[in-house]
Image (cartoon, rainbow, N blue to C red; front, side):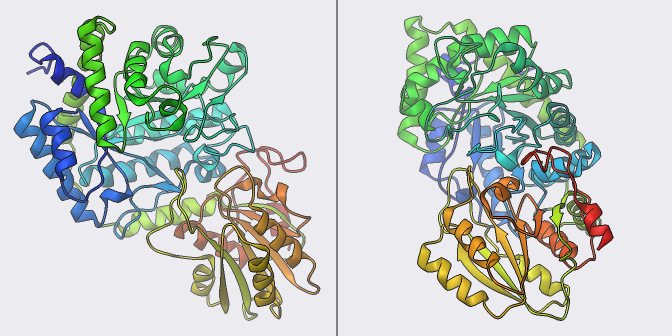
Length: 546
């Protein structure tokens, strides 16, 4: 039986167009109001919804039961499980799959495909049927504060090849992929969580760079595309963000590029929308522009106000009910296809990561580690003590969350039998903390600094720390950029610089292997970080010659 919008009331149809979140580990009153009273079409998970994997699977089952009791259709249950440094689930029993830039450094579409397969199987075992991934943003702005390592890199062809491989891996395993952030958030200097960003390039440039990966994803049948709250004056002269622009969503994405899947907004609670337009007005404008699904992630009063506003806009004639019907038909078609696929695919056990999978992810990590430069310092002396400066995230941001379980580069070195001592610091260090760290490192002949940048620039405290350590005499100093490969641009000249793109366990183990001469750093820079170290650069020849 084909599911259609014909038998639904206006309220039910509008509800299907909303994807919302709530803060609980079980279906609380917030969740019940969304599903039972407003009949929302989807739920979005965050870390606040996850305590254990069995708990999350039970939550998904309970939510679907609520929907089954009240609605005719299952929920889209979604999550931002991009891999690497953006993962809502990092608990025991889940594969810590690599993020995009680490895969970009390895340069293998096959790796991207297999990683997505792993992620999709695990998500589906937990009841998640939509992933807000992969990012198809082309990160060609070194000072981008929000995308960075969430991108495969700065080459549009490489981003397209790896992105479409990941999309195939997710969707073959029954999880709808969501390419984001259309038309491209890679060349911005403002985080749209906090304000309005703009990409000022002309159409020719946009088509050859920002739009190219999305065009390939559409060609290959991506299920959904998420919008960016970013202005594109060449497409929308009025300066509206893409999420609210009919010229972008309907004129460009639907009509010119031929996309037939779901258009999903990024969260309307982000300041680029909520502060300038308000969430209810933003929802109306996004739907009028061509969005099928509206994402409101957190606040119940904002979620219900937006749903009511859209219903009122249809009743007043501001929004056409035909527009609503078309969007709902797309939503129901995707739900029906995913439900059918789920019946055909094998069910994977919860919380079991096969040894074969662990070995594959370890190999992929080795293929991604990039040695940018080494002036004869590697490998480290295995019997000599190593001080590992390890920055820890002390306050979360929209794109940066502390891992639930700590595993440091020092832990990885100790697994190789190295006498390594962790000197833990915050990512943002005061002058006093810098002096304390330098004093703690004195006496070591081998010092490894793991730099960590989640925004556009290496924090000043980490810059000062490396400068002071570089002044020490008769010391082997190695810098490992554990997130942003551009960190070297904010540092004094250093003799050895390695990029891991993330500080997850597989990549810390691989980085430690490189430091000890046990793993060949096979990665190539997926972004140009300076004239001296352009796109595609690898310094592993230095490593071979040591």
